Image (cartoon, rainbow, N blue to C red; front, side, top):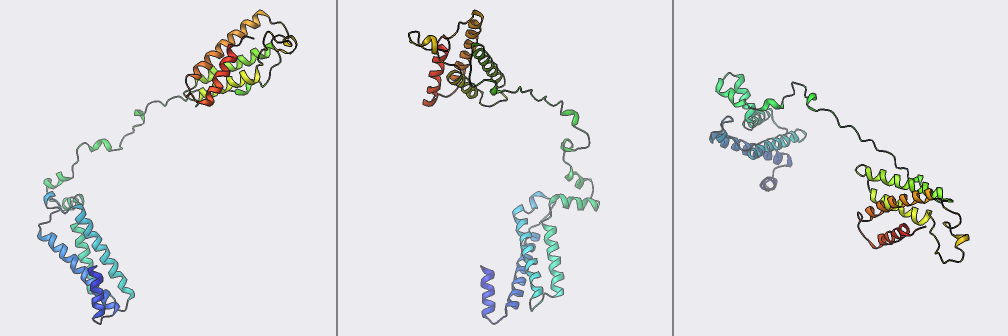
Length: 278
């Protein structure tokens, strides 16, 4: 705001825009020189922490120097160019700003080049920094990589869409139990195994395996899948064993999934189909 007011006052007094811009550069230069003189009068020493400028003060000085150089370089295209004497003096001022705002490490290295003694060399010592060096190989510290897990494929298409005999029912149940065991044993590598097992058993019990007709049904002997032909004992034992295993998987999955109204419509018919003897 002060610079804008100064430029407006100079142009109102009769100066041209080029002359006002030149005066703006000189005013900025004077302010920067005053800041440098104040830092030197305060006993600035880059090697003494108590007499060192803060990071914000150094950044303000560097920003002022950059802004001053930018304003001075914009005068080369104006009617009133920046003089050579002023350019040399401005370069010296910017160099002084760089020396004042130099980090302590750079100042210490400069003093080391001039041979100031062992007291100054101790300022650049950082103990325990040898651990950060990369002078030796550290590959032997990594150890052996973990072997990737062997994930067996789960072929849900093994369960057929329809059955026509007792042997087909046993094979469908055997494939379903085997797939449920694969999903249960690999639940750390395959996501949503509970939902997959419930969906598989629901499809098997409600859409693949036919339900038996009641014993009092008049057409049971001709239309019931389970009464149309006799069943051998080994087939019946295998079927009951597979139904027992499928029921265990179905119950475990039902107690592992959040209960909702739609899921109740899956649990109740599935459990009823498993409990209904053929």
